[in-house]
Length: 266
Image (cartoon, rainbow, N blue to C red):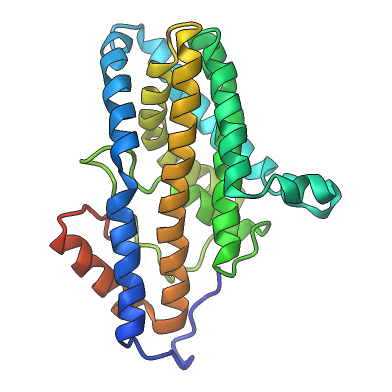
């Protein structure tokens, strides 16, 4: 992330800039659309049964979330590096990610919960790559450690559900720590939130064979959701770099408050 220099001359936060930030807030509001609500409902019904599983199973989901995020952070940059050539470029579009995610989810649901758990790192890496692609659209280097950390933050930007779709803006403009302990600390903070979302995905895939269709649908919807949240996240970062943090975030929070959309603040 580029550190904001307080002495840098910022562009005025005029009507056009305000309109852009308003559009980002509206984009967040729409991210939790009809398809995601349908999947929430379907997953919620099965999740009632998952609550009866031993505590170890629920802990396994959170451990899987932590492992999947760590692997995604490490692997996603390699799949976009020059060594992958035309293959890496051809698999970098949103459409390609949705196709890969749909196939991955279908295969993961064939065997019920065991194969669904095994598929989590693949699905998470596909989502991570899609988020990287959005970051690149907003002028960030998708392979850099700074950008990959910001991609991780997108996974903590709320979750599918009317009561949990906030964006954490408390860190905008802050200097990032790229040490190993800091990375593990960030993943440790995000993993429980991501695990809650994965619980819905795994719940819908818990029944073998039938779970294949559910897995395909949830993966498609999750990629769509996180791509939208990535546009909000990296769009705000770009606006902050251009116009300054205070005015941009104040306007963003104002629009969200008017629509009663939750937002995480420091």
